Image (cartoon, rainbow, N blue to C red; front, top):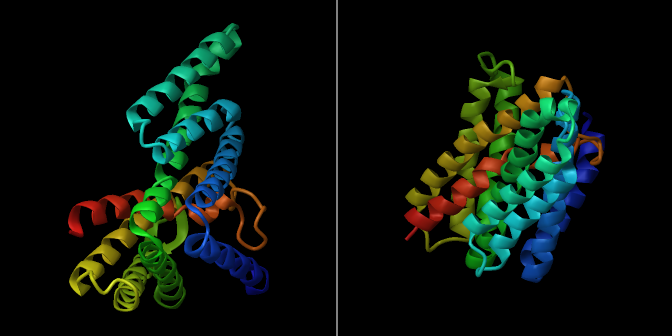
Length: 268
């Protein structure tokens, strides 16, 4: 994809993200997050359809929103929300699987519907407690680590990349690029700590940056593996030059919850 197509979209996305993080009320931030989750989930289900699977988007979205509600309403435990979503899916598929043909595709359809909701909603919803409990600077730290790390991985991979890291999931990713990503993630962590989070020790910030980007390097090719399985490059073309929303959040799917729990338990 050309820089000419990618740059304007990237600038708009970054501007919207900055405004939401810095000034939006929490409820607006949460609603925007749900919009991203729903669009990403629909893109995920569209990938599944290309493999002749039959996910049920409405059930998946309802389950995803139920999981989301447990992050927004403290009175709703996540375990109850998860059970409610599983019960909803179970009831639907039990009623809908009313022919031998539908029963034959039930296991895969049920599994991909439920997995998609958990895979995208549970992970991305950790953005909300990060914003609510920690504030904008902690989100900027995370984004600096992820975005600079991705840039470093791209540059090192282009210039020095030779040894393939995940040749099936992401043929262009190399161990040299991975190292460059870690180095740039460290730079992002150092810059964010010095400018925004001086109360956190530099050593803790660097360790966090390394670990978060290492997790992101698992999260990214995992999403790519779904696309590789159906033989496409992007989850959609909704974002000019960038593919779909799922393509933009792929690194964050595992990195956000890891970051949330890491700082909760280790940044005292």
